[in-house]
Length: 509
Image 1 (cartoon, helix red, strand yellow):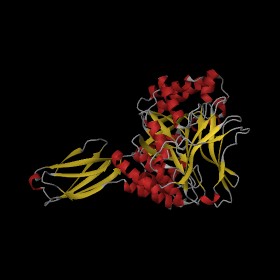
Image 2 (cartoon, helix red, strand yellow; image 1 turned 120 degrees about the vertical axis):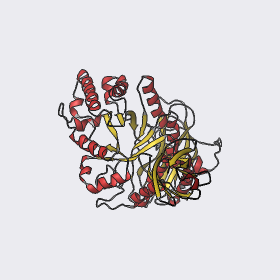
Image 3 (cartoon, rainbow, N blue to C red; image 1 turned 90 degrees about the horizontal axis):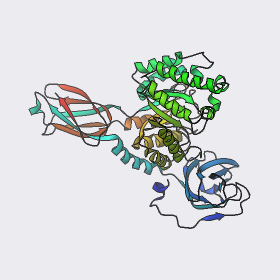
Image 4 (tube, rainbow, N blue to C red; image 1 turned 90 degrees about the vertical axis):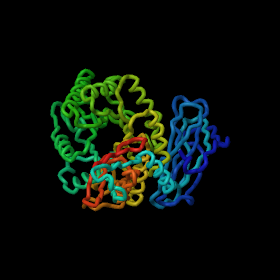
């Protein structure tokens, strides 16, 4: 994960710290680094760890920081065997500390701990962005040949051509809630800058059926109608939510038979009502972090949910969706564990069609995020960031963090869309994560977001060659071409879709 930032990758030297006679889980190597850190810099953590014999079950090993006695997670790994494991993490300090200590901890008392190659270094985001620009060109652009013909084709040589991209086809959306659609400024910003939407709460079971048999679909209906009128695609979030604290009390009180009936009714009611209207569904949210339905109805219930949803609405792509998969901070949801869960579902016949990474992230590091995407990409399923938000008091840092995430997503061939988890102040689930202030002013983070959107629109200008052609390379999406002949100005639209070979577009003038 640190390879890009540290230069030429070298194998481990063979030297490592060995910690023996550990009588507490926190016992491990430590070092004071207070005077080596700068405020507002994002630091990457890279380490290799291994444990000795004698462990009973998986062990969590954590690179942590004590910042004025406050614990900061610098990355962690779950270790089930005697091999070396890589830890990749990050941190940032935004207030002047008096004392910072880095330490490695985690295995149970009595288990030896080995640490090698532990490095902490500031991230070079500028260099990373240059690398991503090259990747983006390969992933999101295509060579285009405009072939002109018509009654004046013989005299087209040297004619002026202007090509302007009106929309990039890469999905970038945001969540919304019922209150938002009453705000004209909110809706106006949304329609101008996003082409996908997801409802924050209004499709969740606790919203559509808060009490047994008491249904509320009006909010979802109103929101869906607005986005259909504006030709904005929508994700269905979510059919079920596996974390018990999100399950309404009347469901928790049901016996096994009645719970199964309720699950069946939820599937039939929701997917029949909205058949063909939601392009995606998050079927059972956060299955790496919760197990309410699995505990009560057995492991097969998860497969049943996917299979039934697919039968009721075959047009929808069915997603798994979870958090902390991409940041190295959570031993419940690292990429290998997610892959294991997805393959397990597929082996049972669940039609998993997409991988949702929520993306609630702090001080992101591109290579760590990319490493997770590379691992998940092996499954061959489309990956979406489904709930992306970043948080910092400093708007410039927030914008930089957001840029890291969106650039990593846009450059990676396995990623097919990004959804922000809100953008307008007062309507955010996280503090200091908004792009637009409560009064409608676009802040520095919002300006950075809009600059990226503008950067990913291609424009070209030139003249038709002797073969009656004009060539350029551009991002996938919708274009307008204007040709100024001696007699008039002609305008045509065309679409550049994905493909490895040059796209030939015939334009009859």
